[in-house]
Length: 364
Ligand code: CA
Picture 1 (cartoon, rainbow, N blue to C red):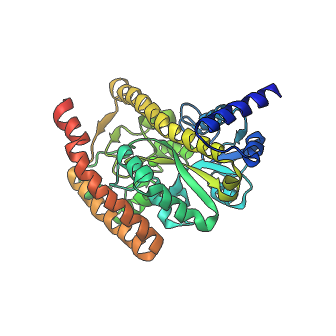
Picture 2 (cartoon, rainbow, N blue to C red; picture 1 turned 60 degrees about the horizontal axis):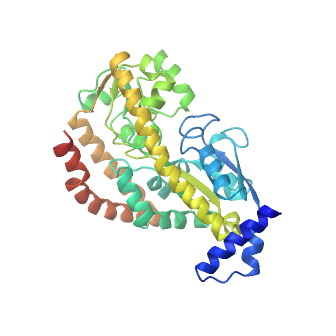
Picture 3 (cartoon, rainbow, N blue to C red; picture 1 turned 90 degrees about the vertical axis):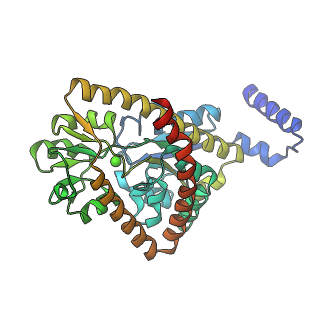
């Protein structure tokens, strides 16, 4: 009781100081508590996604702390409440209020969803944040999901991912022909055009398939996550060119009706906690990947190198075609594509003389 009175008092004082009238609805909603459920496309305990700084459980913890327990979110790993890729339908139906995953899993529902996770040959973490937060990206994301009764926001980022693991060296585009590779999504479509026999396997099946030679190559995430699967024990060539996922955004998907019921201050807490996790998770990836890459090269005999220029060029050409075809088929995808590419064109010019120039010419 004392606690409630005290928080009401402080809320009243802040509002009074800001010259805001405090009415009954504000006070009533400030007392209300919410118990929500959040599902994930990733298994319980998965580093970065489910556990650790900026993960789904960290996000829920931050929201509970910031709201003084007024918004409690119970987090479920893939398969605990709904299967990995059914979070979209669960949030849409209102079975759960939130899902933590990546929007590119939903391209079967709406093709435009690809742009809010990662675009091959697209923008890095900084550019992506620029577009999402300040370039209209989040507004478009919500426009894309409006017909499904959902809203979304970024809540994590892996940074640039690695091309992946290959049993044999790739010296030319011809070396890709007939190669059996685990690679999901849009990048898989691009590889397929260059003759790759594309396989889509869940994370847990990648190592045995690569080790037994069921596949010749595999993409997963980056040094830390890949080493955790043991991929370095099944293939020695680690290609580093992150053309396919230059900055992979984690998505916080929210049922719109549930969102509308939250008081403004709780909405602000969710938005700020998600933004914090976006930065904190990416920071964690930089540390974890720096350590893991050093270990892979120095102590595990991994040969890490970029893809040959001719292969990158062929991948770029096919990516442009795949993106253009998807945009031509669907007006919403075209709208998102045009916004993303317009932002990217300006950002690339700015990045060339700022971040990139620093890395190439200054840092050494
Ligand atoms: Ca990946």
